[in-house]
Image 1 (tube, rainbow, N blue to C red):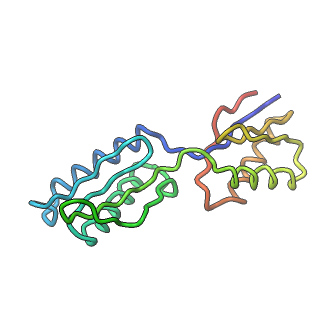
Image 2 (image 1 turned 90 degrees about the vertical axis):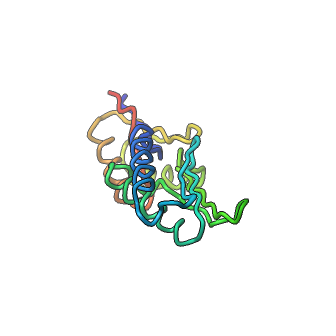
Length: 161
């Protein structure tokens, strides 16, 4: 029985490379010289710090363009609102999506059941596991999910025969 996993995640190597490019551009750009503009990252979030909202918007734009150029789907980035932090600096946290929410997982399972394809789907934590007898039906399921959920940055992993 062939199976594959449906999830939402970004390639962490490409994310780190894109962040390195962002930091390099911020260090070299004329309008950021002599300012406190910086970008740091932790597990699943990017922290942008700047002196004003304009700088934060510029940093956010740089992040989205560099991620796009590195081939990282920008739909995994979820920017939060800007907050004032200490020393009159402005801070924005951008979340990196990792895993499918339970609501989206339920929608995916329900959509797969309505296709009448001979596949079974189940929710395993933040991953939806899809299994079927034939590889062709699984490929049809992948194409269906790509068309049905264009707003979700779905990744298809662990394809096994």
